[in-house]
Image (tube, rainbow, N blue to C red; front, side, top):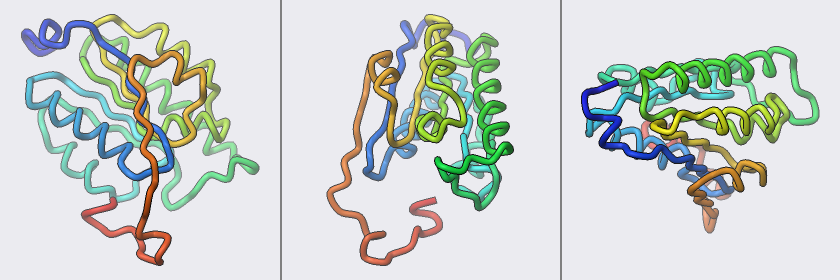
Length: 182
């Protein structure tokens, strides 16, 4: 743990960024940058994103005091009605990695990006994520992102922000843009 970082953080909370609007991962990454700027150590785990070349993963892995892990199949979108065994295996590995990091004493901030979608698609159970929250050490901050946050996760969180889509260029045929959207 960075010297004084635990004292800086005080009580670790559970934050959820959810909703159909853009900005859930971006909000979590904003907290990550703020934490790093204050010397906190961060573990960021991407669920369901595989080794897709997201810009944030590239740059964050070059910064000190952060470990980035990514799980999932590249270029594959999970169909909640037809979950593949490999998708479930990858999500369970991501959750196990997050748990290990959270309990290791090495990190003040642990981010589970897209875990809400993993729960929604039944890749991991909501009860497994609730147990993670219940086992959270008092000096660790947890952030859970992804649309369709389960009501149990919303209830267990200290802070919940819902991103609401008002308008999105995707609906006008504008594809995701490298460097801006991924």
